Image 1 (cartoon, rainbow, N blue to C red):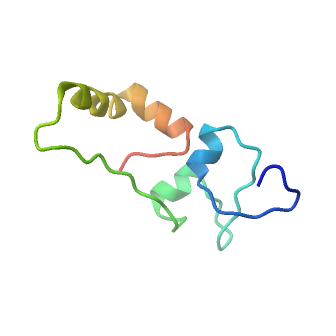
Image 2: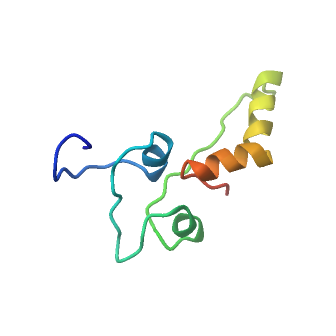
Length: 85
């Protein structure tokens, strides 16, 4: 989409932000697709992600999940267009 003038396509705010894409997300019913609007429910199109693990996840998996839920992990998520539940 970046390389074709006037192109329109489907992507996510998270992808645009995390990859530093030069794309302009479109509004829906005059609501900007921002992290704040998605988290508040004002922007109705969102994509949820879940961790799916075995009943007893390995120490490495537990460490990853703990990091994602830590202040540092949550800050990375916020900077890249994600928000916690």
